[in-house]
Length: 186
Image 1 (cartoon, rainbow, N blue to C red):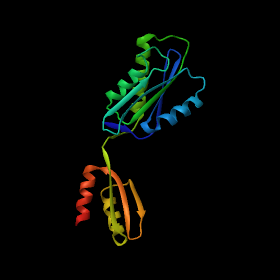
Image 2 (image 1 turned 180 degrees about the vertical axis):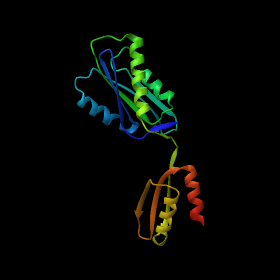
Image 3 (image 1 turned 135 degrees about the horizontal axis):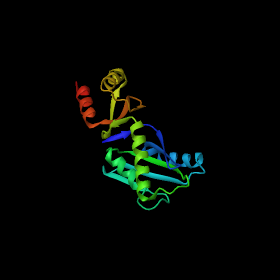
Image 4 (image 1 turned 90 degrees about the vertical axis):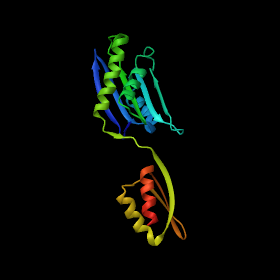
């Protein structure tokens, strides 16, 4: 599975209709949708599709046709996300109607092609499940621990400076947590 780490955009024109696709990390969905509605007040449709991993570790997904004929916009966009094995990713397609009806097949093709276009623009990363791990170290060992974290390429770190210790909370893969524990036991 793969994730999109940044916001990307691509445009497709089909029979005078303009389709502008935006792909981004799922947690930005509401913010970006609000922003796009302000940025494109004359757009006719704001089609949404998304896939993410919920708190139970299951893939949750959804889509909206946003007043396009049922099954012609959101579902094809979602199918493209599925086909590229994207997770924790959302896509919004802004459509300006050009005056020529595309028909059911034309809409499915246009929405699918637009999402495929923006996915090609997107720099994808492999998805890896991350966990939180909290531990404490003495102030005198902090620089050694920071060096180990750097060697393991663990960058998601929160430090809390307590009276006698430093509490560190990291978020990384289970494999990296196991390696870190081995280093800390030495």
